[in-house]
Length: 219
Image (cartoon, rainbow, N blue to C red; front, side, top):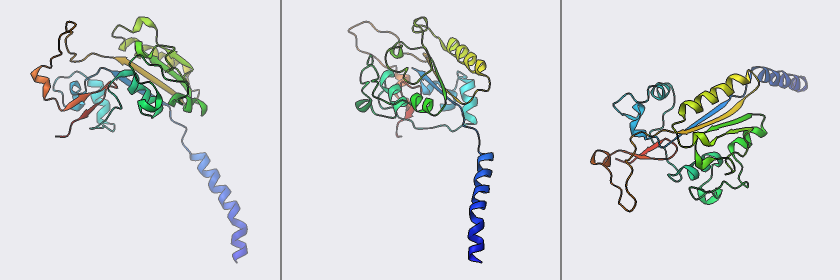
């Protein structure tokens, strides 16, 4: 009886493997959106009273919302490099605002591309301009100079949506979109003068970080 069961186990295992293969879900596409200079305490999903971000708030209601998020360093270049590599600035090498991301790093885009993903980045940021190393692994890296000094959120969105629509059903993709939105920005000050923080902001429970997410301080 023991030998009879052993003879049938390989066939059963093969049928089980076939069933799993037939029902396995397709690999999901990934969209990463980073928003530079966006104050978290000006988003409704983080308690802001004015309806400034209805679409983000609607997404937050049906998503996982992190109440505490931390950046490796509150500047664009260093924090974005950490997001793309999973490493601290000391390790990935982009330690200054105008630093390049060394080619010795393996980026998220490179990992996904090696696994058959189409990769594209639609960017609006001078610090992430082509040639700075952030284009590693992307089939398309769209960051023209005319978008650097303007509120280019709509242009980035339109370009990204057009890229997705133009692909059709041609396998999974990784799309990174990033732009800058100035909400509650501190007024410009004259060179040589000390910065000042309005009293209404000095007790904010949030610390703004460059990726558009904020980390609430311990209360």
